[in-house]
Image 1 (cartoon, one colour):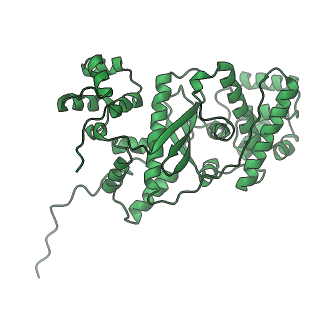
Image 2 (tube, rainbow, N blue to C red; image 1 turned 90 degrees about the horizontal axis):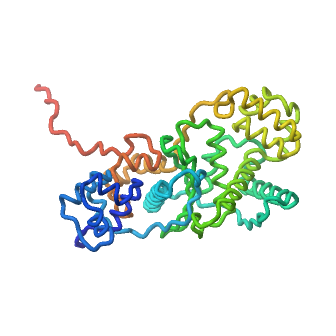
Image 3 (cartoon, rainbow, N blue to C red; image 1 turned 90 degrees about the vertical axis):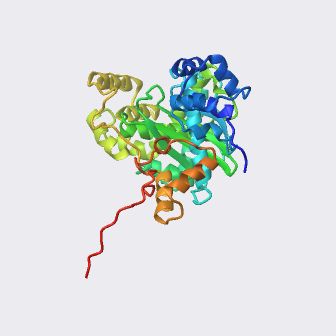
Amino acid sequence: MEKKIFQGSQLKSARLLRGLTVTALADETGISKQSISLYENNENKPDYERGYKLAAALRVPYEFFLQKDSGTAQTTATYFRSLASASKLSRTSQSIKLEHIAKVYAALLDYIDFPALNLPQIEFIGSKNDFDEEENHRVLLELEQIAEEVRSLWGIGDGPIDDLQYTLESNGIVVTGFDASENKIDAFSQRIITDTGEVCIIALNQGEKPEGRIRFDMAHELAHILIHPWSEDLDCISKEEFKQRETQANIFAGAFLLPRESFARDVQAHPTDLKYYQWLKKKWKISIQAMVYRSHQLKIISTNQYQYMMRQISKNGWRHNEPGDTPFFIGENIFQGAIDLLKEEKILSVKSLLAHFAKYGVSLFSSEIEALLNLTRGTLEDKESNTRIIYLKTPKE
């Protein structure tokens, strides 16, 4: 039997998962910065008391530190909607969460036949000059064409997409949600290479945003997955280049969710009537502001009309809260369905399932795994652990 020893890399992973610096962890535990650095670099090992104190501060089981890196997930770049406002530590924390999600996905592949990743082969040219109007028009047409290609490949026609989450998951893209309290990050996406292949994950900030904005976030992240490079450190690109990529993702999202011809047919009936856009919002499930912008992009309304309508939107207080907006949560995802299936078919108990996740490097408390995977609370509770020791008496005859 292999001897389990404290792994410094796991301590560092847990610290980054919580978004803490070495100094912050030292302050919280009373263990010196020098000692923590030595532990993380495997130049020293903490005794059990100190290890337990670190585990308590980082809210992980002590076994987390004894788990060797399974090597089942290699992270590429992570695209964040709010790269400018979110700290690098916060972004690193979210990236590590996605690594754990990818490892769970790889673990479940031992038992579950998930939909295969189904994406078109895209060669996006883009533009290097934001001030060249002709070049920008060419990029717009290029992104329109890519959006049409995706819709064609996925067989979803040119109408409103009824369930975008289901559409993404059916084509091999993992969708999960995270708590809206982490509001400096709207959404993010990542491609992760595992031992079993490539996993594309979209994570969404939910609980405050309405459905239209959540759907736009999904389409925006799909754009990054399709058209942008994943092999570079995004901290090394300029703010201007990052802003350009965000603009491209927004253009794709609008084109994908509001197809050029079908949306134009709808909106041309009353293109400057905001009450009509309220009706269109119910049909297309996209924000009024996104539809007004799309109408201007398609030259259905003039620049003056667009600016006037946006002033009216501001005057009505719709910038952050449009008519019909209520907080939206994504539905049951593929993880919920997979775990429920394994439990219902009695293939794995909760206890054996958590042990299987640990083999793939996910040794977290069950409540945190539930949050990571956007599972219903209690899904990973081990209800079989409390074996009955009292029974009803059998009536005497």
